[in-house]
Structures are given as structure tokens and as C-alpha cells.
Image (cartoon, rainbow, N blue to C red; front, side, top):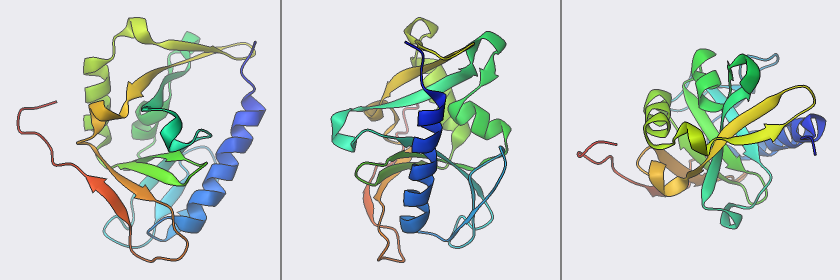
Length: 172
């Protein structure tokens, strides 16, 4: 069965609206295909942000699905690889069902960690009409020193940080 791109695009648009209404800094939605938002306030003001929305609840999985190739046959980058190429500074993974999001501010470290620890043989193939998307189920625990976790709130101006791990001095 082929992946329903139009349905997933709609999920992404809904995720953007939810995110826009409750993110902890002021966002400017950007149109086009380059990136989703520019951060307008706070310590990340001026930085570009890419949002990945997942329809699952946070507690339904211990993984992120990080798309490696949006079109595997053409080796067209997806996920954080695509975001970095677009000039994004911040990559956010949102579990839209409950408003929990993971914010990565060092895309190069994220990419290096995933490439170092996730073998090509573990890529998951998602058939679409005319092309295949591939990516990995990446355990959140593998990346916990690279992100901050937040919950969307439309009523607080400051971020509500749920957890923040310090980077290990022993490397990735």
C-alpha cells in the first residue's frame, strides 16, 4: 500500500498551526518550500526553524522517525539533512497529539550522531506513488544530550522546559 502524501501534508499543516499557536518564541510563518518559520524573538531570533510533525502521541513510541531520503531513488535529502541544506538552524520534532516537542539546535551534531549509529541496513522504506522515502526509527534516548523537550502552551510567554541533559564529555 502506498503512503498517502496528501494526507501527510495535511497532518503537517495542522501541526504547523498547533505549533504556531503555542511555541515559546514568536514565529514568522514562511511560505514556499525552503523552511517553515523564522524565529522573531528570544535567544534564537533570526534563526530559521524546520518543523517535523508526527501524528502519534509522545508516549506511543520511544522513537523519532527521521527521514534520510525524501526520494530515495534520487538521493534527495530529507529530515534534518534537508533542513541543514536549506540553511535551517533549528529542527523541531513535534508530537502533535499531545503538544510535546523536541528542539535540536545543532543540526550537524544530530546528523553526525544518526549517521554514526544507524546502519544503512536499518533504513525503513516507505512506498509512495512513483518513489520511495526512507528513514530510521531513532531511539530518543540515543539523542537525549542533543535536544531540549518542551510542551506547547498558548498561555505562557517563556518556554516550559521539561528536561535538558548535559552533553557527555566522552563524545557521541
